[in-house]
Length: 434
Image (cartoon, rainbow, N blue to C red):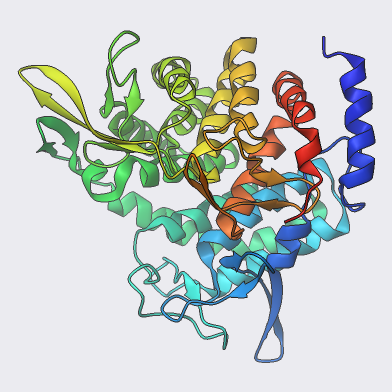
């Protein structure tokens, strides 16, 4: 059991440092910086949209706009929507409800006629229709919009019934697009001797994983056979790019794109575990558990890694282009999600312990020995560039990904105790505001 002296010390520290609006005593979640990044805008005098600043730089952490992109995007607003939907489920207060409604209105506003989404908005509130990463195509921002909307659809609250009715055509349009996109079987391509489905070569396992997570959300309220079939097809694509075994590199890791693994957004294990639990598919579950058990342990032993490539020569796998940096919050969140889903499925506390250990990256258990999440301000620094260099900016992605991680950690007592024990060890650093 967790020593009671740690709980007492934690409450003392939190009472001194934590924002008074933090939803419950003992919570590490501080939304102050996220709310600082939040801005409501008025469209044509009758539509209020909730936006999240993409960039916010040290030392003053004010809005930084990008001439090519803009100031806000569907990518980050959708992330925030997922966070507030989950917060509302835990704490059904008016503030969380208002955030859900305004962020959803922004996503709806950014929909194109073809059912996909524009991503960026300029400071004059005009939609960026030109940037390569803002066009309404099958891409990350459209899948994140899908994730956010399906997360909202899972909430059982009378206050949201009207909004859920409004978003249904948006979900249906994306769903039809996805069904058409993956209607035919994928052929196989070869990269450095590694065979991968063309779907993974084109979209990446990271995008396919996001789609699977959203489809699994949808399936829980609409268990249509066609959705199950689509999940099974996409899941098998993910499993086909899992390499190694418990004794040989890359230890059951899922490649992210072609024959490359990268840490950011690597949600394959979580997507397979989550969908496997809902579909009762043991094959998905075993595949996901293998990566969590073996590859995540390797990552922790290496003090985390950024990217590598595998090649096949004479029936053997070799690692190429291994890089440890940079490291960002978006690297850590997928592993925490998958580890906790593994614990949910198996009830093996080792997976929850692993999730707690992964979360200590935020509290200084990283190559730079730097506290990355300051719970007294709610800021997460944007990245670790080397063992001696920190990116002290604090934009939307790092902020929200960290809050999503801590949110799920706090829902698991074992993981929370592991993370909090390390947090208390580093407590003197956590009340310092840069």
